Length: 253
Ligand SMILES: [Cu+2]
Image (cartoon, rainbow, N blue to C red; front, side):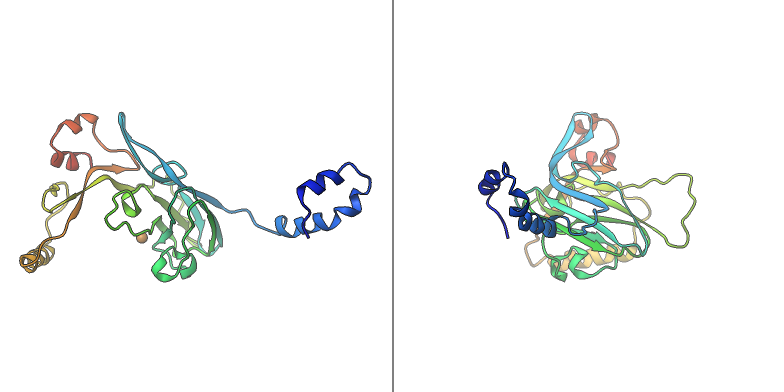
């Protein structure tokens, strides 16, 4: 039973209040003080700013107003509860990359995970596994919208502490590498010389074959990036923005 607020206020000055509001307080007790565990972590999805370098600020969608999103530490085999608030105007999905968890919380809509509604929230609870360094990120399909999904700053590190070998490290450092400022291109114009190591022959051949096959058809668009960052910081000073676009891509990595 619920009592209109007006009636409640009217009653509140009376001695009869105790008996009158009893059903009200009972119903409140059932809804709000049910044994709801506190979440281990809260993620808030909202737009915000990332300062990649002094005077180089990117406006995008973030977790908890930061990039990367906060480090979430879980324990292998120990249930984790995460509250996800979506403060944006579009439905969102938080995907637990690399974890073997049920599809209703995994964060992939194609596997059946419900979206976190726009301006709504969802609580997810799962037993994290396997142990190790993982990450979480949005699983919204961006399509041609470079302000959505993977093109935003929605990514963060997860560390699942192993049950058996806790690893007595002196120091733990978590690195999240992410590109920013995407743009469409017709291919081939993003510098690749920042890639480390020797080219892999097999991959080159696959690329060559694909190019040949595509000759007949019109080639689709590719997405290239202006900035590369480690933990939300691009390397090198802002002078790089004066260099050509292609070399900036490699230097700032
Ligand atoms: Cu993923």
